Length: 276
Image (cartoon, rainbow, N blue to C red; front, side, top):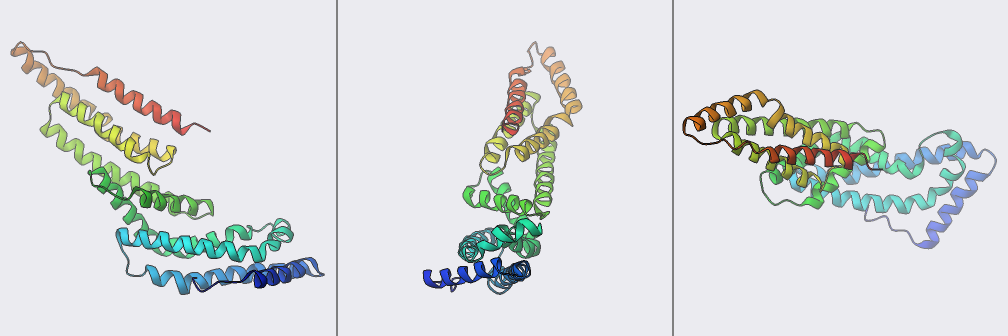
C-alpha cells in the first residue's frame, strides 16, 4: 500500500481515461468491467498486503496493527477512488449496485473482518474487561475497534451483531459472578451500594466507546444480574439482617436513595439512546 504513490499528472490521465470509457458508446459494459476490476484490485491488495501483517498478532498488538493498516488502506483507497469517481456518476446509480465509494470498505470487511473476526472480538472484550477491573487501557484504541464493527455492519457484515452478543454475554458472566460473591460476603446495604456503584462505573466506562443503544443493553444486563434476578435473595438477606438488628435494638439501613440512583441512571441511558 505504501508503494502506491501517483503524481497529479498520472492521476489526471487515468481519471480522464475512465471518464471517456464511461461516456462513449457501450459505456455500461466498460463501466461494469472497470467496477469489477476495481474490486478485484482492492481484494488483491488486501490479500497480499494486509493479511500477512495481521498473521500471528494477538490482543492489543493485533488491534493496534489493525488500526494502522486500516488508516493506510483508507488513504490509498481514497486516492484510487478519485481515478474511478466517474464510474459512480455514470454507472452505479443505473446498475443498482453499491457505489465504488464503499467498495473498498466492503472488500476489507469481506476479507479481513471475516477472517479475523473472532480475534478482533476477543481482543476488544479483553480490553473491556481490563478497564472494568480498574486497569488503564487505551480507550481510543478500544473505541476504534468498536467503530470497526459498526462500519462492518454498515456494509452488510454480521460481525457487529456477533460482537454485541459476545460483549453482553461476557458482561452477564462477569456480573453473575459478582452477584454470587456479593450475596455470600456483603450485607444487604453494602450489596446495594456496590451494585449501584458497579452500574454507575459500567455506564461511565461504556460512554467512551459504545453507542447509546448498546450501552443501554449493557446496563440492563448489569442491573438484571446484580438486582432483578437476585431480588428474592436480597429480600431474604434483608429480612434476616432485620431480625438480627431488631433483636439488638438497631435499625437496618434500607438505602432507598440508592434504588432511586439506579432508576435515574437507567432512565438517563434510555433518554440518551432515544436522542436523534
